[in-house]
Length: 68
Image 1 (cartoon, one colour):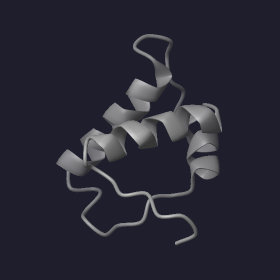
Image 2 (cartoon, one colour):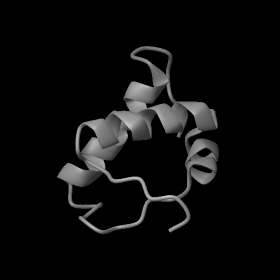
Image 3 (cartoon, rainbow, N blue to C red):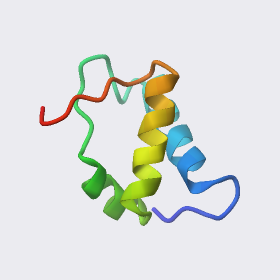
């Protein structure tokens, strides 16, 4: 999946995850792939995924846990 330029790529990643949550593809307690893998899968930089994860965490949609 390749992302387009507008809105921001990180916001597009946020929307992808919100959509997965709303469709029940991600449930509380599910593990999300590491940022490196997601970045490769979505054809974006790891920094874009990191920014998206920060937004999702601020919105209370995910909890980041290092090394888990």
